Image 1 (cartoon, rainbow, N blue to C red):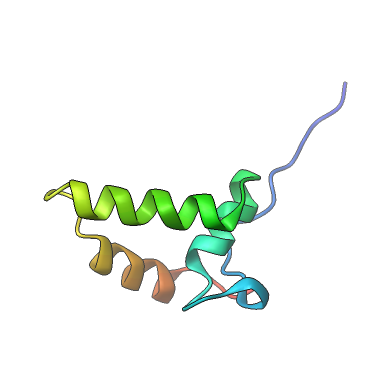
Image 2: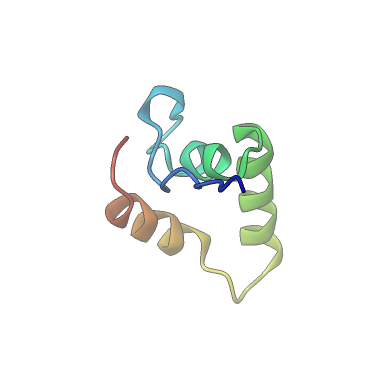
Length: 66
């Protein structure tokens, strides 16, 4: 039986455009950082219930650096 352990969620300063939050989430999900950034912006702009800037700042503070 093989167990797969997910990598911990952390910011990725090596691929950071601003704080590394989207790049860290992309690495954790196994996606490309550009697709996570585009999805984050689209959800932030199209949804009044998703305060994107506040969520990004909270994740920037709470997510550890790699």
